[in-house]
Image (tube, rainbow, N blue to C red; front, top):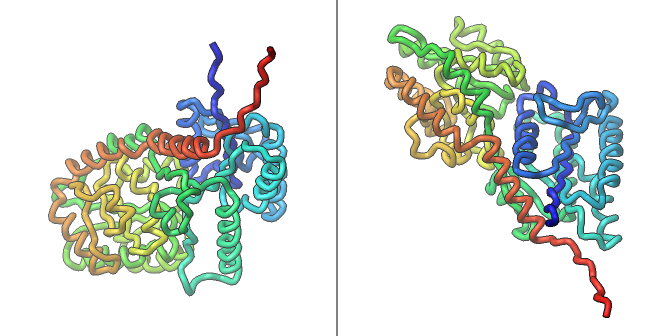
Length: 399
């Protein structure tokens, strides 16, 4: 009996995943795809002697610290990798920054009239800088990113996206849409926070937590001001912001005036995030209702849920798509300080019920694991493979 060939995927991610907070997006999904029967080569920056990260096998390319040289060395090595596996690889998945290096391979394949490998661009974020706060370098990078994304979208065989809303926002043609795969969470890792949490008593403050980018567009200053307004109304509420970003200095300056009600903590390794979450009672997502957030699938939401935290969130569709109708979320009907304060008042009146809500949140997280995300990615890849079947060889029958 002929053994069915395992579908082969080469996945290019020009970054280092060691210590990266969202590294699970690629590591956990790669591991899950392999369990589903895929042969996956995940190519990243790193020491060639490093063959795995957190138990997941990776293909590391050593690169110099200078950005342009880094890009060149990485992609030249990846091109050589692709050419070595040209006749066995089914799909190459890449990101917009790799497009200038990948497009010549697509043209070469088309020139040779080959049908494989297929090339698919994956898009997981839109440009996140706030208008008016962009440097010249940021603006040039944004325009370059837009240009290469459009070229890749035009010439690639298909597109993967984080959500269908992302595909709509980018106006990806229907024939180029293979499918979406959202963010996910490692339930086993983040559920440790539940077992180590102490829930607040009647006299204890409620601890709010935010982990991630401390950039201006994340609306963290409005949240910080809402926390101070709550304390002025005699609600014992504290907020801890863990991360770094463009607004970090301003947030630290503000925190110094709050007598400890607002605290800024440094970035922590991904494997240690549970140690931060176990000390909190509410996970917060105060994002404004803007397109870059509407099209997203916020990984922090699923991590809060898996850690057994009730959620305080704005009514942005990336949140309502996951939690609409759920009892463990406290909704803010806007992103300004007054709307966030109203949500804090609601959770304060329910402070005796936080543990039950946290248990509901943790149960709901099981629908959003990396294994589930990998199944959606597999469906998208299989859609592309079905749309572009390989050429069949002509077989001549002897008389």
